[in-house]
Amino acid sequence: MYINGMKRLVYREMSAWKNSSNRKPLLLLGARQVGKTWLMQEFGENEYENVIYANFEITKAISKYFEHSLEPSLIIAGLQAEFKTQIHPQKTLIIFDEIQESERALNSLKYFCEKAPEYHIMAAGSFLGVATHGGFPVGKVNRITLYPLSFYEFLDALGYGSMSKAVYEKNWPLIQTLSSKFEELLKVYFYVGGMPGAVLSYCESNDIEISRKIQKEILEDYEADFFKHINHANAPKVKMIWNSIPIHLAKEKKKFMYKEIKEGARAYSYEDAMNWLFDTKLVYKVNQTTKPILPLSRNAQREAFKLYMVDTGLLCAQAGLGISTFFEPSNRIFSEFKGALTEQFVLQELKANCDYPVFYWASDSGQAEVDFLLQCENELIPLEVKSGIQTKTKSLNVYIEKFNPRLAIKSSLKSYGKNGNLLSIPLYLLGNLREIIYQI
Image (cartoon, rainbow, N blue to C red):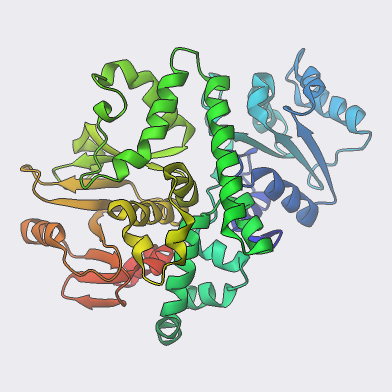
């Protein structure tokens, strides 16, 4: 369950997949460098007698076993010859890594599902590559998305598992006692983020500067991928959108504006590049709605949205946020460039720990705007994010007065508490939001 000391919660989902009677080939998706390869290999070593690991990017020759036929028995025979070992159903985990490099291998998952479900096959690819293939085996694979480490996974990695355990066990007296420690570590998480390489370097060195170096390398790798997986006409546009995200989040109103990319830029000329970037899942798109009616997608404003990056640490690096802010005794980090990091953190926690559709609400006049509006099954819950211990929630109050929701949430550094239908949740507890909502 640990990546060099880093526990990944999706390990439990992988275990459920292994033991399922309706198991299909498992496709583990995620942005580059979120830890997919290590997690698959660790799972194989822990849960199976042996592992066949085929990386289509490193060993191009493996693709030859898929060229002439996608018959599972022939592919298995080829892999046994290549790796000089027997593949036993139920006892061998077959890993197809960087599967986006072989469209035939990606298509083969369909036939393993239909003709040879007894084999345990786990494949991984980046959204960057898989999203560009037309032969995706729809309905023939189980899928799990791996995100950067959440805040609680980060705590486990740093050796503070007792703190995350206190949250899961809802030990409120202990949580209150440790509130200053939660805030201190949350500040570290804002800078280090959840990319495994950056987290590991911080665990080993306790040096944020080293983590920043790794973050910059990841950003460079992502930009190189833009030009690898998209045509030369759109690649520069993708890069411009990507680089503009910190600029947009630094504004009071964080709605994406094409004019911030380039003077005179219009949506139609950037639409393909924007849609491609959405498909990669390197950015999160949060659409605006003015009508909180189920389902929220029904009234989403197509042209009004905010963009967030995949990781708060990468956002810090992309924005060039100086390390000096971290060492300041105040909590200035939580309000840095208009609270953008705090909003980024909240959305990141929602993605990693909940599967709620997420939008944001704005009044018709544009005078009031609630940061997030969550579709929690058959209920809509507004969520306002505040930096530090600020308590003023003018926009949220407008929403409450207008729509009278059963529950509204304010998240800041203020202590946990409830006043009427307004629930105050500290930022560091948002990873447990689903359970908290169910209890209210």
